Length: 225
Image (cartoon, rainbow, N blue to C red; front, side):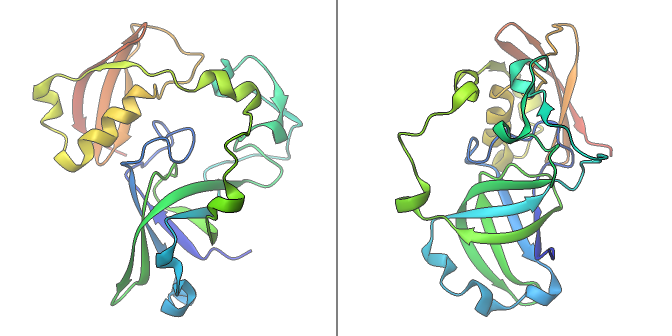
């Protein structure tokens, strides 16, 4: 398969990336095609769709072979489930699937078609293998069940973000950052209230602690790779 595009987001690392696409609507990304695919004809008609499927590569996953079971982080990291019953990046083929909202199709004079999307759960620079329109009459199943994953979603933390620290975050990134923190970016098996974590986002390193259901931001500094 050929890489047709890359997506550019505010996440330089995987820490803090939403666990599923669409959970945080305010997250912005740009899909920029590789040179052989910068043909406006290839996206003709795409502007009529509100959502897209992105098929992409877990490009930062390094593995030798594969395992039939994995430890989903949202189950505490100590329960094993079949790899095909999870969305773990550790798969026989490291391929991801995300549904995103299409905000705009821009025709850039140098880059060709640029897709502005919302709600992406991808690291900056993630390679894209394919793009398909989302069809609500076939792709949406309101009656679907979510198996063992169902109980772990819906819980949100209360975020304490002092105004003097929040003011260091560009206004256009504040709402998305608050949603990222409410989703609790920590691995589920880490519950130490004294530990300080850092979410790299939009050029910043947002450092916080979690005690119970309260997340308190302690520091906001420039992110250093």
